[in-house]
Length: 211
Image 1 (cartoon, rainbow, N blue to C red):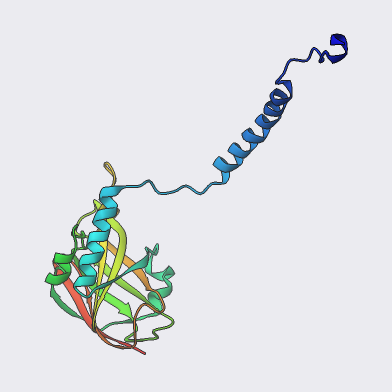
Image 2 (cartoon, rainbow, N blue to C red):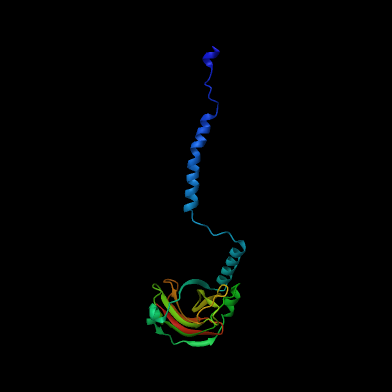
């Protein structure tokens, strides 16, 4: 009778072993697909995140809305689509940011030294946005434009281009440059605004009508 009840000589657990071996290629394939197509996430930076939140809180408390502007550096004026814009009747005023905006920012932007002219339209559509071009003096050949922000507070607009230092021994060909920025559609509500193009030593100011 015992001989009739004998089990095969196959050790227990072999079936699980073969299942595990079969899963290995699937796990390898899943890992490859996940790593290859997964979107990289920005590393969590507690200090920078807290600083950004604190600065945003300061701006909102002071009544400012901050908008990131798209910035382009045309190779020359002839190839600049904004070259057809009219030269604005602007007023040169002392440089620097308004006190309440300056106090709201943790890191003060490195502004261009001054501006020689600004080009745009004096009336723009709130839906279509606007292109603004300007000639500026960066102050030296060791800095170049890194970006620009637009700050809105009531009927005031402050445009603050920001410079960054060139790496190593690199230097720009000249400190005079022509820049174009795009104000996105929907960023401004209809109304009459006083615009300040902020510079370190000298700024430009003009009036803008938004319909």
